[in-house]
Amino acid sequence: MPAELHISDEWKGPLAAAGFDTFDAVMGSVQGECVSWHTRGQTYRIELPALRTSNGPGGEVVFLKRDTYTSVKDILTDLVNLRRPLAPCINEMHALGLVADLGIPAPEVIAWGRRGRALLPWQAAIIMTEIPGAAMSEFLKTDQPTDRRRVVMNAAGAVAAKLYQAGLSWPDMVPKHFIIDGDTVGILDLARMRKTRRPAERFMPKQVRRFSDRLDKRGGNEDDLKNFLDALNI
Image (tube, rainbow, N blue to C red):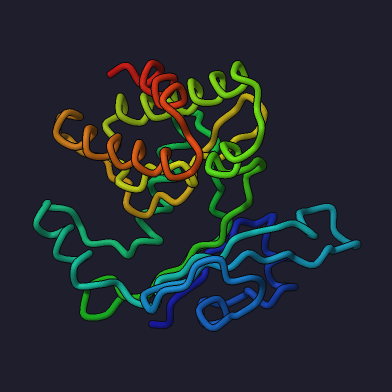
């Protein structure tokens, strides 16, 4: 049975106009700007054509993320942890839903599809909306008042605290994945986020250390980290 592409009703027109009306079309597309490339998958930033005859979405930016294959490592990791193996894009779609339920701004999946092989995940793709704002890694490079930096880092720490309190593990928690929009902080790149029953102290310190290391390399300082940790407070 051929793979199907599932599209939100209000986005069917705009995506069809851009040529995204089948799973094969999504997997073969090279439209837009490639913002991440690996042999195992790619991400493209795409500006959709505006549809003047439609009252629905159109003329907006979306991101196409796809898995050209699911690695053996990913499959074995899921099996060892007694989870049903999922392609990274499909896991990210589920994670985005969990994050949205927590009230944390994040991209919205407007289309998705997958194709299996021998009862295991193989290929997958999601198309997501863009969330407004700038990455924390860019924010930290700008000349910002001390109070403004404190508000932003407190807000980011509060987001991280909410994730951990909900039992979510996020190995890719780094500054570039926090999106700053005014005093609001959203997140993206959740392909490795998982719901877990493990106590937070078994994985949170490693993830916070990674965040701290990247923060230092992206223009953050000791006060920025302290403000983040004060709000994390777990």
